[in-house]
Length: 256
Image (cartoon, rainbow, N blue to C red):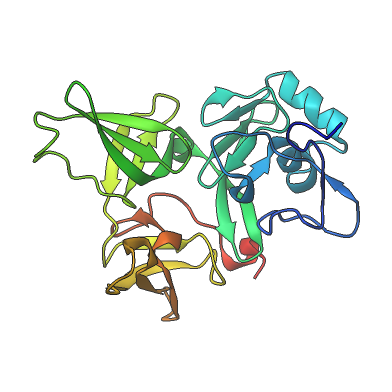
């Protein structure tokens, strides 16, 4: 009889490249469960607590920490040690009263410590839009969640200023819109994929390519010291208009 169901185990060597873990020191890794982020773009909570933050030495200890409701993701308690967390998620550890944001770096995802007002919101990118019933427009966000925007005329909404790949600043855990960052030249952005992952700066040029999808347009980003990086529009995540809305890791924290 053939094997049924999804895989439950995973070795470290074929694990996603964004995981900042040693590949040859141990054999097995933790397979994340299905959730708000894709398999290639997430970290299981066990990996965060054990391998990255060092709050647990074994998976059994990580399970006990999560089961005791000591870990919150985006303001909600998560009780599964294989729950997937991803880009811009806010992780709070109750026992030590520390909060972290998941950010990209040249070495993969990093847990960047945050504090104060910054712990009460997150940035979400609009991946798609849909017109639904009762005069609402549904915004599909990068973390698997949706927001409904009430408009007077969904087919010709003047108040609908949201476009795909724009970024919203939303409160946690209420998920109310605080600010809107359009993806355009002049805004600050961080690169979330490709060979320049983790680099951030100002968008100086968006080159429209005829016959190509908008997500594949070429973008040029210039950092604070004048270095320029090019990537696809799909790998660009706006973080502020004139100043970043979130704190970003320094080169030392990124492991450069």
